[in-house]
Length: 158
Image (cartoon, rainbow, N blue to C red):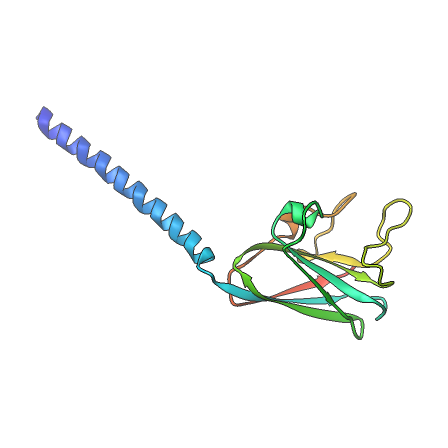
């Protein structure tokens, strides 16, 4: 009887290891889904412009450091606005988690102008239409996941 209990215990341990192995492989397969060179396009539609002067700067970010400007953004783009709206397509972007930040560079100086207290004087926005308190919103509040061939993000500039 003791021998039978030992055999059952060995089988239970083996079954546990096999189950764990299958779960780990399934998790890796999910990662492979994201990293199998799958790409998609992100169409960004912008509204809320006060005029059609200057250009619109957009940045696609992959991390908090990129979004906060501590390191260079993953992808930068410049477009024009017409009829107080603009759009841009980030093409062939690898599946993953991203954030978008944008601003209306009305005077063409390539920076978001601010007043003496640091408040922006040009219109700006973030994906998910997130807003920060006393600074830009966090990456987590602006992040979205690209996991399909086409995605559209609408941003209302404030």
